[in-house]
Image (cartoon, rainbow, N blue to C red):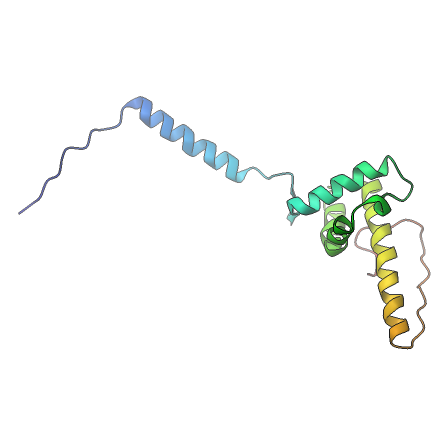
Length: 141
């Protein structure tokens, strides 16, 4: 015995056009790379915000990172690998922003290393740099 339910009406052409347009819009939105993707380097909204604040500080200070909150500096420090990759992969961030981020990273990193050396009773000596600017992918952090 076959059971039949109520007849389901067939969608009109307008409904089909709407469905197809919605599917196409969804595909376009999903496949469009957001600003946060730098040729395979995904940067979080939090990192993008910290970079935006650093960019703003560049115009106001000769030491822009020192004007950022501790939280923003921590975000930049923790994501140094992504900042390097974004600068290396297609120059997704401009050089002045990269230099500012790397300068702060270098200063923080040296401070941590010096503190650790003192705590261990050792001497800390900074390796001499061959250049006054940082280059993505060549630093030895």
